[in-house]
Length: 355
Ligand SMILES: Nc1ncnc2c1ncn2[C@@H]1O[C@H](COP(=O)(O)OP(=O)(O)OP(=O)(O)O)[C@@H](O)[C@H]1O
Image (cartoon, rainbow, N blue to C red):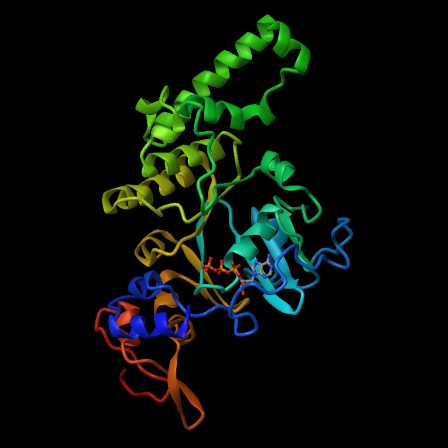
C-alpha cells in the first residue's frame, strides 16, 4: 500500500481487524515496494525439485513426537522462495490436518499467494518440500497434484464461459474418467455409461454447492457468487483431499458469505475434505477457521486459533503498522485496540498501557 493509502486507512478509523485488512493492509516488502522487481519464475530449489529432499529431520509442527508429514494431510516443510534479491517466503512450515478448516492471512505483499502457489505446484520453492498424504510432491506438476487430491480455486475466476455449468464440472472430471480417445470417438457403451454417470455426478455437485438450478446455464451468465460456487464444484469434481480456496467470498453479498461458512463445514464434515482459505474478509476468516497462520513480509509471525490471532500484538502491528517506539519497544497505532475486535475494545501495549 502506498503512503497515501496508508494515510487514508488512519483517517477512516478501522473498527475491527476486518476493516483494517479491507483497507488494504501494509505495503509490499520494503525490498520491493513496487512489487515489480524480478518478476518471473522464482529461483528453483538447489535440491528437492527432483524429489531428493530428505524427510524433515525435526518435527517442525504439531505435538511433540508426532511426525508432521504423517499427521497432516498436507505439510509444507521449511519453504523459502526467492525472486532474485527478494525473499517472498522465508522458511515457513505449514500444516493442514485431516478434516480441518485452516486459513492463511497477512497484509498485502506478505507472501500468501506465493506460498499458495508453492502448495499447488505453480511455483517451485527455492528451498523446502511439500508432502501430500505423507508423499513428497515437491517435484510433482500442478495437474498431477490436482489428480492426487489437491484441488484449488483461483482469485480470478477461471471458468469456460461459453459452456454450461454442468459441462464445466464434467470437463473438470476428465482426469478421473477412464474412456480413451478411440472409445470417445466411436462412443462405446462403456463410454456412454461413463458420460451418463459423469453428468449425474456433475448435477449432484452443482446441487451440493447450492446452484443446482443453473445446470444448463452458460457459466458466463451466472451471478458472481454462483460462478464462485461453480468453481468450487469443479474443484470438488477432482475428489480432493484438500481444497485450496483463494479469496472464495470475494464478490459475494453478506448473505452469501454467511451461507459460505456453513457450506465449508459441510464439505469438511460430510466429505472429509480439509479446506485452506486465503481470504481478505477477516469476519469470514475469524468465524470459519480452526487455525490461522499469519505471514508478514514473507515470514510466519503467528499461528493459532482465531482468538490467539486476534490478541497477538505482532499481528496487530503487521496490519496496522507502528506509530513509533518507546524505550526501544514498538507500539501499535491508535485504533489497534478496536482492530482486535476484543470484547472490551481495549488492549495492552508492549509497555503495559491501554491503547
Ligand atoms: N513472480 C514474482 N516475481 C517477483 N516478485 C514477486 C513475484 N510474485 C510475488 N512477488 C513479490 O513477492 C512478495 C509477496 O507477494 P504475494 O503476492 O505472494 O503477496 P500476498 O500476500 O499474496 O499479497 P496480496 O494480499 O496483495 O495478494 C511481494 O513483494 C511481491 O511483489
